Length: 74
Image (cartoon, one colour):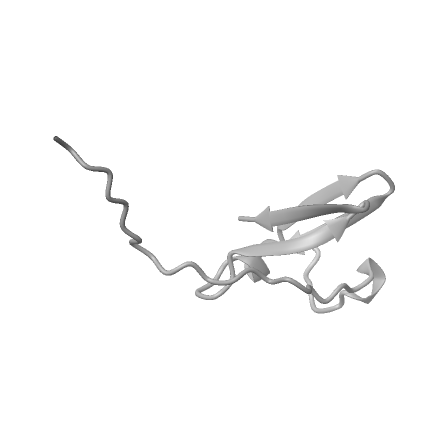
């Protein structure tokens, strides 16, 4: 019979666990046309720049928003 034998085909990178938060008015390093992943929970909102979630060592951000744990990924 067939046996289930999963194999890891890629190395997963550890998540970003403590993202540096910058108020929107101070994010001068970003362009106005830059894509972001926007998340809003209650009265809190965050914008995670897509270019910071894409790359050889970044895939996911673990964060707290609106008192809830979230995972942002692209």
